[in-house]
Amino acid sequence: MLMRNKENDEVRNDALTIQHIAEPVILLTVEQVAKRLDIGVRTVWRLDKDNKLPAPVRLGHRKRWKADEIELWLHWNCPDRKDFEQCKTKERVNNGKGKTHEKRT
Picture 1 (cartoon, helix red, strand yellow):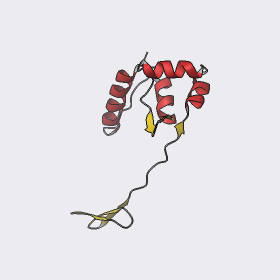
Picture 2: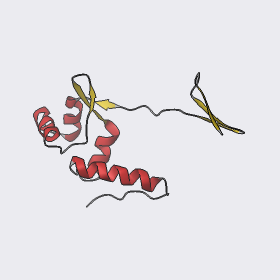
Picture 3: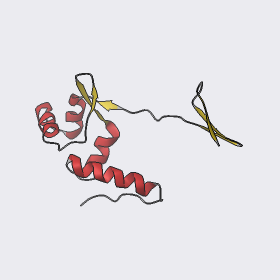
């Protein structure tokens, strides 16, 4: 039986104890994305509007992009947002089975 300790977010399973530790997420500004992609800021906004970049994270009225998603998007040869999200979903499922996603060509 799993029991959660609310004070320290610890999950206990009888003899097994698992501590949940979140990996930090690095968020990039539009200027940082533009620099990483070697394009202009306006081009980043245009790519975002046309759903050609990974989906940004909204912080109020601001948009930020996850650095690891931008790197993965580049590794997979810059698919549009819909294809990128599908590949991410497949990656999560396959990683659970010991498989990895291959670079798109």
